[in-house]
Length: 183
Image (tube, rainbow, N blue to C red):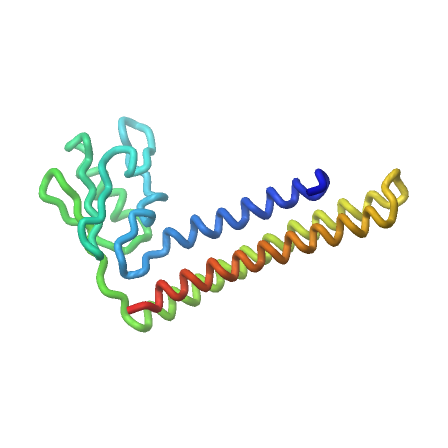
């Protein structure tokens, strides 16, 4: 891969990674510990991910269990989960927190599938914007020591990378939608 194009490939990789992380946080009726990834708990004045203050397990298909290493954090973790956007009310017995995921309704599944497609479309727009920036930079090379053929090759390579990332985005969206629509 040409060094001039590699920069844009890395930017597209970041856009794709952002999408996959975002999709991992979408709850699909099954317990997925990744829904907790964005939630931070106040741990001695420092916002800390839940996975770093306790043991997160999935004992059943629709339940996440959090066992904090420091039992005094139970209230803080409950508060952080309630303040988040995951829409689940935690229950605890003083030492272990349980999150029970309700079965998704057909309407909710369709709504989530629509949100997933929108996230995918946003990711493809980001990839295309990166391609546009790359093409602008390549066009500025005209009249310099770079030949017309090399410029054309760079544009073709950038287009191929863009198409690859768009296919990856489509595949990720399709897989997540299929997971959501599964009963």
